[in-house]
Each structure stands twice: as structure tokens, then as C-alpha cells.
Length: 231
Image (cartoon, helix red, strand yellow):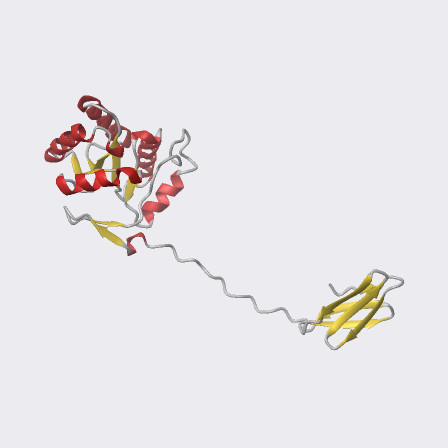
């Protein structure tokens, strides 16, 4: 500030060659002098004041432009449908009882042009959370953009697979879904037959397979080469 700083007894100070040197019983300390301030050493005190008392002009306010989710698109080869490259996953983050803290995330995602929302029965309460949030958003605003829903079947047996997929649609609050995939290739042959039937019936628009493990990538590649799937 502008108040003088007293030099303690037994300490000397000197300003020379652009430096302030302070010498005391424990040694000498030297610091460079800035052109932005004025230094005055007299009567055993150091006074520091701004070189120019006028306040700098305020910088104009800057705003961060919201990202455009539609700037980068990817095409689904089998149908030609284009989707933003950035989607919204729901693993762990949407596995909640209270959706209030995460609803703004989904609302913002859709408002910015996002479309693909991915889930799975494996993700706990995520499908239920997504369905609850979408219902609330549509109730608040009937023109809420429609997402591209993607979920998965993650069980064994044709009958159990059908039951699980029907439950997923009910939790999401939909009767038809854009993408249904076989999670981690669990009983994939049984489920793929069902998915083809559902696709023919119009219940599923796209079908696919997934796996996270590098050890299963060869199997994924083989299925993609030999089976008619979309993703």
C-alpha cells in the first residue's frame, strides 16, 4: 500500500542500480525495483506508491462460446443417419436415486445439439434415471429435442433377453429404440436373432455388439465381418 514501512533497528537499506538492498544481522537481501511503482527511502522508512495513480482500464468482458455438438458428425453406414460424434454416457454418473443434480447435464447436452444417450441394464439405475429426466424435461418443455437412445441387452437366454429389453424400453419411457446392442457379447447368438426380429418389426432401428476388453476385439471384428449389424 502507500503506508511507509519502518526499517528495523540494526538494518540498513539502500536503493542503487535498480535494486533495493536490505542488510541486517542475518545477511543481505536484494530485490529488483519495478517501473510500475515508486520507491522512497527516507527517515528510516520505505514508501512504495504506484508510478501512475490512475486505474487501468477495465478489460472488456469475455464470454465463452458454447460448443456446437453438431460441428463433428459421424454417419451410420447401414442407414446413412448422421449423429454428433460426442455422445452422453451414463455409467456410474446416472446410477442415482436423486436425478435433480444431473438433470441440468442432460438438458444442456440436448440444448447444445447432442443426441446419443447411451445406457445399459448393467449401469444400475441409469436407464430409470434417464427416463425420469426425459419425462420431466418434456413436461416442462414439449419441444425438448428427441435423443438417439442406445442401450444394451446384458443377460443369457432368449427369453430373459426379451424380458430385459422390454424393461429397458419401459424405464426409458419409449416403445421403440434407435439402437440396441449386445453388451460384452453375452450370449450374442441368441440375442442377435431376437434383435433381427425386433428390427424387422420396427421396434429397433439399429442393432449392434459391444465389448470393452482388448482380448475380445478379434471376436468383435469377426462378428462385424460375418453378421449383418449396424454398429
